[in-house]
Length: 325
Image (tube, rainbow, N blue to C red; front, side, top):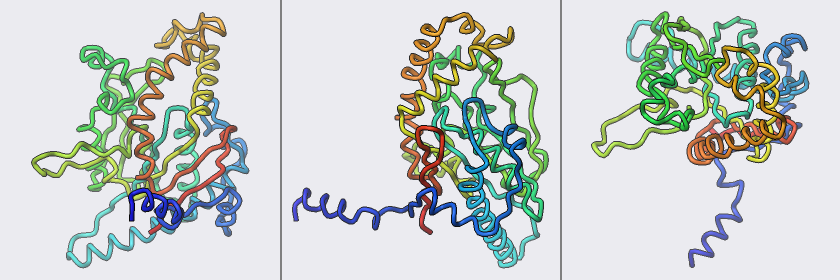
């Protein structure tokens, strides 16, 4: 059989070879079953990010079924952990269930993370749910400047990967009061001396651009952990490049009239731009930084996710792909 015939045969198999089971929005919505709606419109308004619209219908159709699925996964994982502890005759400990959320700039990761946190924390057993973004593990601007990486901010090399791995290892080991650095989007930098404390949560959500990116393999064969090694479940927010670009530019234009006008803002210099100048600047940033990062580092990690949420042109999630067990 020729290579061409082999390729055609593989294409013909199509979905049979896919590691995912794909659902339309309506198909996924039926999986909610009797999961109660615990968020109000006011709650949702406080959770959504700038220029990332989300409705109660989105929560009902997409996030309530996901909440139900995660409740099953968390219970199963906790049961397996307890069984393993008994097998090892080890002392009982508390290991958090860690959920990773990845995707491009302007895909809506922050809104998804906050909505999930709110829903999961309102389960009947009221678990302790905490949320950390990997922005805090970016290297400070002074260090990025010194190493010529300011134009690569958000790329894998701009993070303190060792600190992030150490943080996740400590949380996963059940340590109490594990500190994570804080990032300010207003000043566009890590806040010196400011941290948040993660204290043995039942569930930890980790949100960031490159959280599903594997490390480079070592020639020595020495095991080096990936960030995703600490995840029990992972989600990728997906959308067409053209939509992501438009959403990014729209958000930039809105920030120009709001946060950029704050004297403390790193982007204060953009507040005085007219509409055409601001759009040109936003498009330039997208094509020089965010789009290359998406194509080189973020999008290639999509197949590593357990769940892929695909958005349409209006931020509405139209398709859900769940990895087959």
